[in-house]
Length: 271
Image (cartoon, rainbow, N blue to C red; front, side):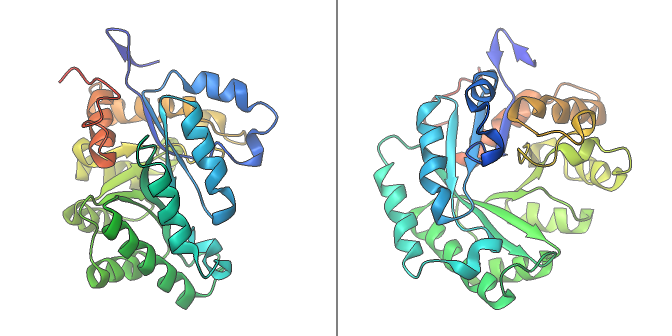
């Protein structure tokens, strides 16, 4: 475990600890997750928002992002924006909700109609602007359309993260210029993923945050198994190799900056 002066400094900016894959041993997973400085648990639909928030409220180092995944946009409740906003307001004092997400477009599976995906994405962008939260973007085979909508609707002042980035250096640079951080997880450890490792080198460690997307996308040494937050150490180890130095403190600062947690003084970076 990466620590400095006994301080937890690893971060998982994208997990789904409320999902059924963790039902058999969630208590054990959360106990191991205490070794991380910061975890953001991310909802995908209206049905799992309360579970997402409950986990965040149960652990000091876990926060929540709530929103409608593009796969779920086709079945969204007509009052969904008000429901999300009211959840944020209800948690305002504890400040456990730190982002709107994951939101965006997914043309790989097209589970929801594209026009509906675009509508729900744009509406949630406007909500994030109105309530002053960053966004967690889900983009799959839809980088151009997501970028166009961001330019049309407007980028939230607090920007956010391009979750599970999977495109080339040109798109990485375009989102970084908009002020977004690039979310890097288990796929960077895959032997054939030189493209992603090259993207990381080009955009620089100051523009990267680490994530797991657990229970999905485990790092190479855990392929075929369920992912969990503690495995983010494999991602950090790969980034240390790429940059030939220990980058974990910079990664923590990046994550705290995105979610506005430095001001909350919940995690001390010794800066």
